[in-house]
Amino acid sequence: MKSIRNTLLVWLLVGVTTAIGVAALVVYDRARKEANELSDTQMKQLVSSLPQPPGPIATTRTNETSLRDDFVVQVWDRTNGFQLYNSHGIYNLPLTRQSGFHDIYVESTEWRIYSTLLGDTVVQVAQLASVRHELAAAVALRTVAPLILLLPFLSVLIWITVRRSLSAVRRVAAQVQSRDANALTDIPDYELPREIQPLTHAFNELLSRLRQAAAAQGAFIADAAHEFKTPLTALKLQVQLAERAGSDEERRQAFADLKGGLERASHLVNQLLTHARQDPTVPRRVSDRIDLVALARSVAADFVPIAADRGIDLGVKITDPVPACIHGNPESLRIMLGNLVDNAIRYTPGGGMVDIVVRRHPHKIVMSVEDTGPGIPEEDLDRVLDRFYRVPGTPSEGSGLGLAIVRQIVHLHGAEIKLCNGMRGLQVEITFHTSI
Ligand SMILES: Nc1ncnc2c1ncn2[C@@H]1O[C@H](COP(=O)(O)OP(=O)(O)OP(=O)(O)O)[C@@H](O)[C@H]1O
Ligand SMILES: [Mg+2]
Image 1 (tube, rainbow, N blue to C red):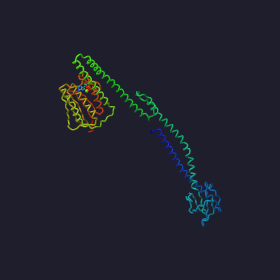
Image 2: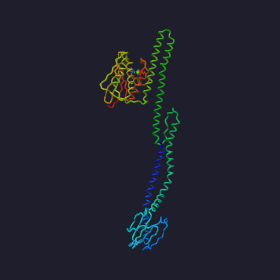
Image 3: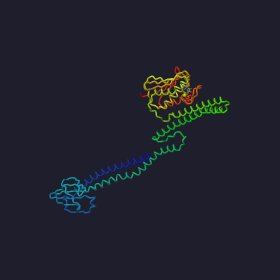
Image 4: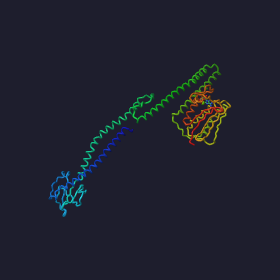
């Protein structure tokens, strides 16, 4: 699992260590250049301080350790190349006749040499290159050492800062953890760092949606229980009537009523289930290509026997005989149209007409179900979309859920629904937006 604290710590420490490393290299490079310049000046000064002409040959030092901090001075006769003087007998560096500074290797040891002409002699001052490097390294180390000592202090500082900054996250997590499942109140976000507030805002918005969903669910369960009370009471009474029936005729009648009551109760259960399944908070696929003309014909075919039974002329009107395609969920759309056609047939008196009409427009397709029934009183037009609402005095049985289910499916498809009383009866129009 990724940890912000560890990532911050690692990257900050890597950054600080790299910065110190780079600083050490830069200081070392500068120190080496300065040490070189200083040693070169010393070599020149040493030559100018020698007696004129230099004294006779002598090997003054043979000890190698003392040489490390020292300069090797050698003097040659300019004409015959005979060595007149060597300050350190153990080193015999070659004669360099060309004046100035030279870097040479003798037996794989690097030397810095300054040679010059003094009268009839060639004077050569030499120094081990390693001595210069060590000097530069010592200077660099002295400069960088305090920075390296700072590293543990910086690490602790970074660790404490990161820990303190992230403590707000732990606080919020503890608050969420300590809640019970029913506590859907907002998490207080005052005194929280600005960086964490978007998270708590988003979380609080989610909690608010959950509160709404829980309230809606509670109301739905209460409504559903209430709606069940009447049919269940009726069923109980019908059973009692059947038990008390004095004759076969009475019993047959009581059982017929009981059967009707059971059918209504089972219709209510089916509508409740459909309503629950079409809940807009449940994600469902709306990407199938669906031809609304074909859907209209297929649903009409399903309802033709029922319509004929009630003496209603059910038909499909298509303004344009080409397919009218949208993206949607086939099962939901069939339920939607089925409920509208069911209402139209059920509430239109015998001898009336019901049409499913599909009209194509630029960027939209309008599907409507039009009947020649009584329509819906204007004051009830908005309310009939609410679940369990039935226009008072509606003769036929029903659960009052059909149009609420239709509205859910309309929303699922990003479409719009409009109910209006036309010249002949009710018109329910659903507008689907298309990209074509
Ligand atoms: N075509 C229509 N003509 C007249 N009134 C209608 C029509 N469609 C719906 N209504 C009125 O709107 C009310 C709500 O309709 P809805 O389809 O939601 O429920 P329902 O038909 O009573 O029951 P369900 O469809 O769940 O069996 C109906 O009770 C009825 O009063
Ligand atoms: Mg209905």
